[in-house]
Image (cartoon, rainbow, N blue to C red):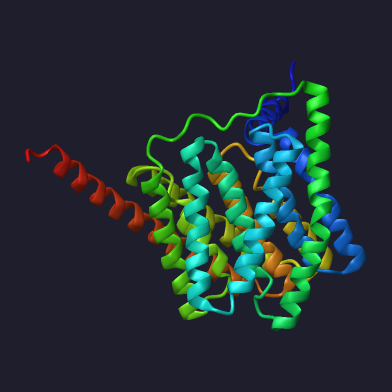
Length: 340
């Protein structure tokens, strides 16, 4: 007679196999793990942020089968965009305009191939996140030092990602890099993204919102097509934020502050960017680990509230931008079809 636990164990394995991208997870651990190890040795927080650069290089490299030379160009684009936003940060109107321009270019690149959106997103996300993160609650000199550490250490992330791609190419054969067919409509989503990001960045700068990168990325994230698709994306993000942050906050209440726990939670949050098949699962777990990391650092309650509110504010800006561009596009089409 079979054990009653056997079917449930098999079912659990099947669920995990469907939800978790094991190969991508292992590769992400290879490129991000050394950053966490370096953080333990050097006690330098900037090295944890470097993990975001590493995973931002890895995601397009794996999805689009990028050769090392394209990964190097992607790396340079991240650093240049990050540096521009960091230097513009003291001039709030300029920062808002440049952030909106970065969002526009991330989507406008689909004019040359629809898969350029993946590459564009993973320039925009780390550049905006780091530009906000390095100056959050610190002096200008400390922010500059933090930025310098990231810049100087970042070639390590590039080397690790290139090494993984070279290994995969030799083992599996050199898959052809393709950016897909040019997008039939690229200007409207690019313009909607720019509008949403500009509004989000302006609000962050005017109100000095903490963790403002979440507002700006949430604004860009929901611009994924028509209003229906964008609304569905915002619903997934809202559910993930509510559930993930709440559970992370509750878990943090029973755990003591810990430097080791903080680093491992940051590592786990970074790995969720690539490791899960369903967006809502990955985003929910990312929110969970971010709230947990904040708890280990001693600030879970505030960051939990900020995460939820910022996701909703940014997503709302994105929906409004998509709705406005759809209205304008419909009016243009009506005028074009009407008799002269």
